Image (tube, rainbow, N blue to C red):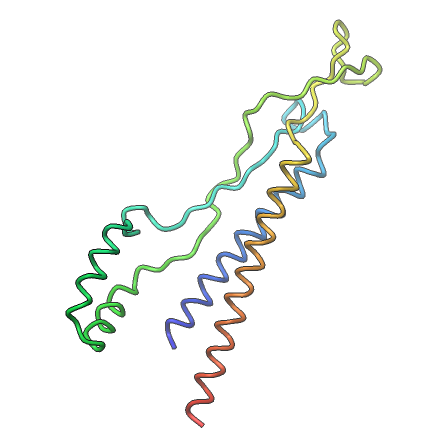
Length: 166
């Protein structure tokens, strides 16, 4: 039952992280035409940075194959014990930072705009691209839905486990 609770915790961290990403994308889309910010200049696109498991902790494909070969000599109980002992390193994901994009601003010729350069007539527009933001939002939405599916399946397994005791 503790593994199912861990599954809930991991799914919960994923929901929180993807919700944060969707909020940042919504902020980017809302400021697609903002040419003045409190920091000065046009709005800069923001991106979410995640932190998860360390790469050293994730076994490579070859290491997995070696471990699998070692299981061939074990019985079910020994294999179960080994997997249970390895199960303590699961972690979720968390948002560690929201960074600003360093891409160049788009220059649009509009001499009548109040923020236009008086000499050239070009206006520096935010470096937000609608297509990129919509694609990122679709990815975040799919990941959010997958996390909800994990939590719903975990809940169903818990309910079935409780029915066994009846």
